[in-house]
Length: 132
Image 1 (tube, helix red, strand yellow):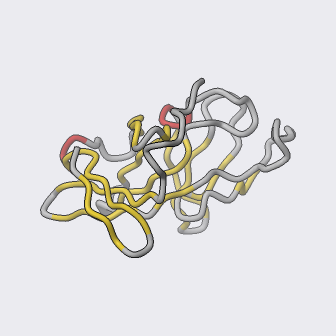
Image 2 (image 1 turned 30 degrees about the horizontal axis):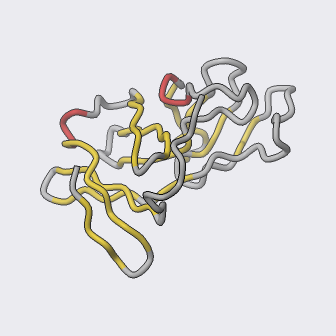
């Protein structure tokens, strides 16, 4: 993994675009943060938190990719809440409440440079790794 620093954060090379299967998630540990990466049929790539805010489990990369009125989404694999891949907003709570009061997923900017997927994070290497 290589890093480049921008004014608003650090771009970290995570993987090759071809390593991400369309409409399947992949887990990544980037600067100590657990992320779920998703590639959609239009080759857009999204990075959201791996932790499901409703179950507390790090399972979002196992979610089901879909769309809702044109919005790319992922459904949580445990209780089936639906989240926007663009914003992380919870679009459907499926009758559950989040464990920590925040139903939305954290998202990170993603870019593909020369077929390399990069995620921008302001994460400091001094932060502790997220434990499941």
